[in-house]
Amino acid sequence: MIDIRRVFTQVETIHHEFGPRAAAPLVRGAIGAVLSNPFAGRYEPDILPMMSLLDPVGVDMAHRLHAAMDVRLARIATYGKGAIVGAAGELEHGALWHVPGGYAMRELLGWKGDRAAYTAGTVDEKKTGQPGNALSIVPSTKKVGPPGATLDVPLTNINASYVRGQFDAIEVRVPGAPAADEIVFILAMSTGYRVHERVGGLRAENIAKWDGLR
Image (cartoon, rainbow, N blue to C red; front, side):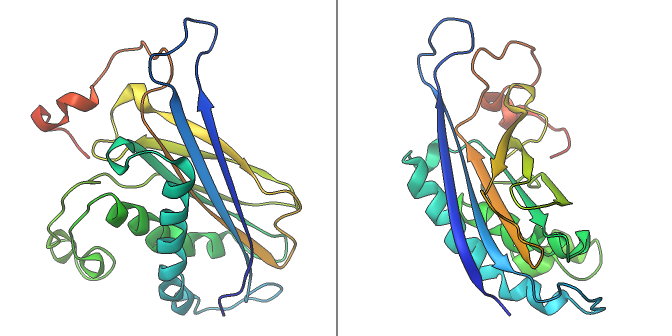
């Protein structure tokens, strides 16, 4: 069921945007894995078995992306994920990436909870995990698109979604993909604040003092 056809990685280093050169440039990276879509061209009522099969794909992609970005793990400050489904698939096929993609990055960045407790059962049962780092939900987007379609993958702080200066996105495009019978699954991370951010709000260094929603 899991057939990886291509893997595409992109990394960008941003030094300035009209203002002075940043003391520390922003590094943003994304990785896209192009997989054949086993449900292409037909309606399959039970697609959940594929979700667990994607777990090792997510883990491998998260580690590959960190290596490509070539920064210390402690410098990773934001993350996001997404999917582009080929025309013979449906949007719901992209939703299969929510758990394997998101938790792969969270666990890479230090989250210590029980993944199963967050993916099944009642609301109370979902609170039984013991989180460490990477406390925030991983923002996500998905769409059905043609070969070469672009996706703006959202990025937010790994521990508090309301760090305004780190709201960002990275545009991802895999040339020639997805074909009609493919899905592009994407992970993205960055080292933090937008270059020259200056619109106020919660600072990442103050998260420990903050009692707001994650």
